[in-house]
Length: 74
Image (tube, rainbow, N blue to C red; front, side, top):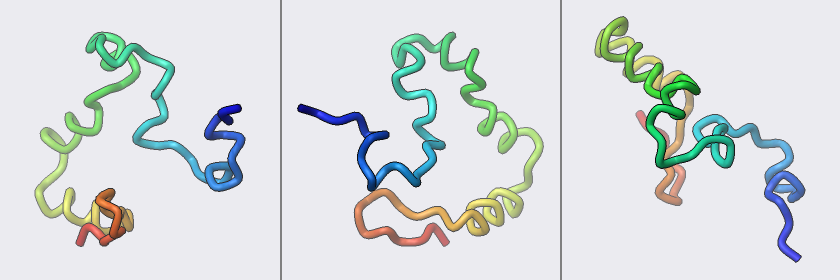
């Protein structure tokens, strides 16, 4: 039997951010993506933030790369 990710202890304490709409919207329908606030972050970066603001936000977030090694994004 295949378990749902939410049922595995490894994932129970994790909060989906980037993939929060996975399984909720049609990935082939751009209008659905936009209706769920898709591209809002891009709009903010392009029109309201400076380059330094973007770099500071990413650095302060503690974001790590997804390539498997977990390197910080600084």
